[in-house]
Image 1 (cartoon, helix red, strand yellow):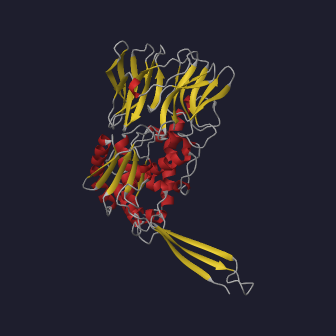
Image 2 (cartoon, rainbow, N blue to C red; image 1 turned 180 degrees about the vertical axis):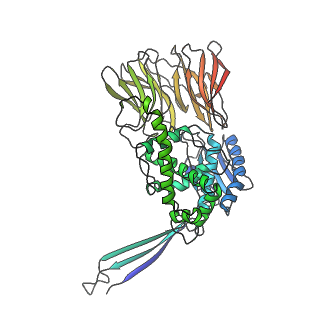
Image 3 (cartoon, helix red, strand yellow; image 1 turned 45 degrees about the vertical axis):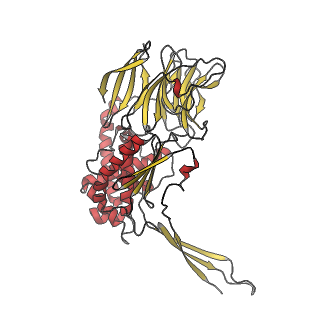
Length: 518
């Protein structure tokens, strides 16, 4: 006897009435606050008041434009959840449960330019919430279900009810079927005139390299993550560029809204067909047009620059990213950060030193991020690395120094969340940024003596701290050769600038003198 069992299995989500059940509360020292606006419930940890209220204003500003474009409104107020316990710049939109989780740390992602982080990330994630919600085929409380058919071989003994299974067929039916490139592309495009994210020179460089080296992801491959960080960023880059191409040629953000709403119907099943029904051309055909347009545009640039190209060799051939190169004072060695031998850049980057005389590369330290600096006598390198050496096991950056003489790594700060360090020409003062409460401040501290047992300095030991605002962060500060001035990239609400501070070492003060727009 042969039988077939057909099972209908549903994955259900349960809406909770608060945040007490979330994983964030495994850190019991956090004190949570809540307030409501017309369309949002905002939860934040104590100390993030300015970030939370500014984010709520941003969310209310973008709510109506996005809802109008996609003709979709959440069925409850959306929860915006902010914390700042780790040096992680990220967020996630849980559009099936109307919640968005934010890490308040401002992003300094090397694959992109420095943007107005808070306005950017709130708009990006809320675009996910609205755009993906508009593509949902049924209630958000039933994210997906699937049919499953099991078949069995004939029984071979009378005392056995079924034979061995020999057939298994599963047919999944998710409520949302949007490929990654369209989801991330629309979240970066946002809406016409928003200006909260934009196509910057970093993105253009990565896309240009992919096109000219024939490494552009295919239409199918753009739909998935799970590759190297460079290829995963390609999903964002290509998605942004391709979505912008579609919008520019077919009616702006309104076209994106119409394509999204098509996906909420039983037919068409694929985004390729939904794009075709709205624009008159299937997605794969528009992809070929977009690719040809990029090849033509970047080909012209390549041809114009070809007469001026010089041939060079790659020093580190194992990694696909090398950042923040700094020559030693004597010019014999080069320190740099690379993901050499690792797939992911950012969390797996390490500090290396290239010795020109020996033509060799040495690994100095792992989990290093941001700007690095040589000691004045070239005896060591100061850098920031991510650690969990704190009472709550958070991922935080602190300053370290590696000395070549005894191959010793010395911790200089503890619990300071310091990055992008530069040592003064006289070796007495450390210049760095502090990332806290959604701000990236400029700070100075005395360089500890590197003899004996070094006691790491803490927040109370900082000599000077120049605060920023949540939408105006400092990045990559540098000393002038004479140690009297400080140059730092200053990200403003729109765009970036270079700020110059006059530093008075005797009085321990810094005053802004010049601002040069970039």
